[in-house]
Every structure is written in structure tokens, then in C-alpha cells.
Amino acid sequence: MISLERFQKIRHMLLHRQPDLTVVMDNVNKAHNLSAIIRSCDSVGICEIHAVSYRKTIYAQQNAAAGTSKWSALNLYTNIEMVYNKLSELGMQIIVATNGEGCLDFRNIDYTAPTALVVGAEWDGISKEAINGASHTITVPMLGMIESLNVSVATAVILFEAQRQRTLKGMYLVPQLKPEYFERLLFEFSYPQLSRELKRNGEPYPMLDEQGGIIYQSLLS
Image (cartoon, rainbow, N blue to C red; front, side):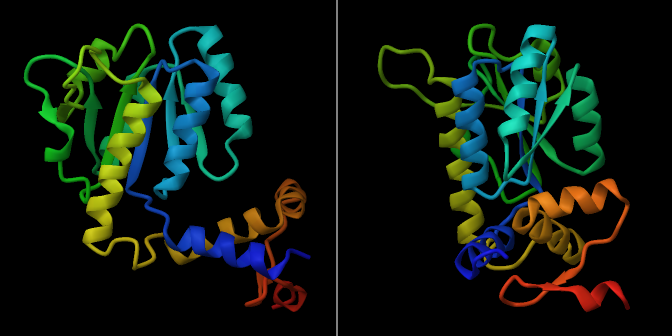
């Protein structure tokens, strides 16, 4: 059985999840950057992350990262159009982080609206296809000699601005996940091995009590 302390921590995490905030990694492939971005996403309450790869070697790196992404699901795509179509259907504004003329200061975006932040590869930067589909392009202003931040650092800076705005609006005070989705994730995170077995056998998840214990009688109703 899961400990009460861990169960409460998982529940607290889910109560603060923001399903209308996400990140798209456009060809990001270095393991340390993938890992750092995933950690930042979890820190601000992101449920799902998206990664686009144009080469098999990059896909392999992203797929490996997906296997270690425990708290935020990492969805993989082979082109940016696929993920943009999905995000557009969800009514998300697509905010692309890049450098160049016409970019807004990243603090001038309303991140309390449904938002997908798109960040680019370490060397190549953001793809033209990603920029063409953007609602807005943004940049982190630099006052020194260095042209830009590392992709994982820039992502963290922007995400914590989004967290700041959402905190001020009280968006972390009200549960954002639908009740059925909340309960499903709560069980899967609390009992990962059992949930995999039940899913494999096509069996429903039992209910949990307030201490995280399994209510086996719930399967009989």
C-alpha cells in the first residue's frame, strides 16, 4: 500500500495540474535539455508535453526521454503540423520562442489563456514551419554579449512567468483536471504496477479512500 505522505503529495500535485498549458519541443535532442525541460514542465503543473523530431536519431533520444518522464506524459510526433493541429483543436494559442525582428518580450504574453510554448533545437533553433504556425513569437531579452539562453533555461524562464501569471489569477487554487481524469491519474501514479496490470487485462480501476487505500468493494458495484 502507498504511504499516506506519498499519496497526499501525488494528490497535491494533481490538484495543481494545468491541462491548458503545454510545451512543444521542436527537434530538441540533447538528453540533458530534454530532461531539464521535462522537470520544468512538471514544476509548473504541465500534464502533457509534445516533442517533434525530423530524424530517427532525434526520435530515439526523445523516445528515451519519454520513458523517463514519470509525471508528465511526453507525446512524440514526426512533424510540427500534427501537433499544431491537435493544439488548435484544443483552442490553444501557439507561442514560439525565438530570436529575430518582431518578437515580443516574453512577459507581454497572457499565459492565463490556453497556451502551448514552442521551443527549438539546440543548434538549428526553431524551424520555419513552427514559426509560420505561431500565434505570437517571443524572446527573452538579453543585455549581455551572449545572444540567447540555453533552450532548457529559456523554457524554464518562460514557464515560470506563466506560473506567476496563473498564480496571480488563482488558477492553481481551483482544480483544473476533469474529475474522471484526476481519479485515473491518481490511481496510476499511486499504484503504477497494478494499474498497468489492470489496463493490460482490460479491467477497471478500483476507487481509493482518503488515505490512498484500495476500496476493493468498488469493483463489485
